[in-house]
Image (cartoon, rainbow, N blue to C red; front, side):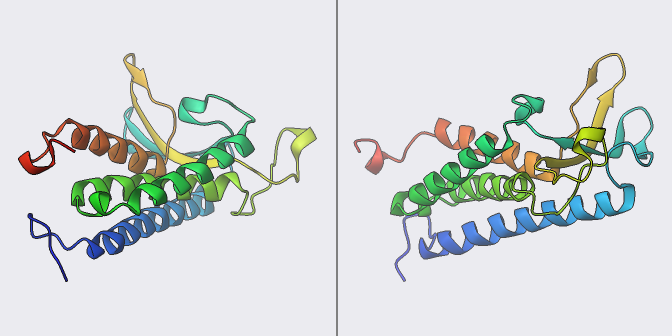
Length: 189
């Protein structure tokens, strides 16, 4: 197999991408399942305090997106998620993308995060609302969140999950990758 100038084997790009995206999605979904099995739906049981007044585990449902914006637009965000996965797949089909292991890792983390939250938005966990009364028994089409970070008096971060973490790390990596200086032989293209 041909290798690029860095010694990276481009077909390995698809394997790395698929492995990281799959692992990220599975880890996210397993942790959500475990925490919701232990704590139940939001408000049913008290959370688990890991670091007093800083870090706890508590269940929450987000029918919106980033920081809870767009509540009730879950199907719209599901459509955006599918489009994003299609776009990432198209970008991954380019040899230049697969030649760059950092870009592959970044796109894989974003994809894993998207898949984890998309699974929830489509109602695949099979949860049903327990409140309010008019929603009792209806399927939950919301992202399951469970990590609560706060610094009293400074910040009370919205409850999030590992898929959100993968998305943020992947986006940060994409930003760093975009700031790199291209190698001399690629600067003209």
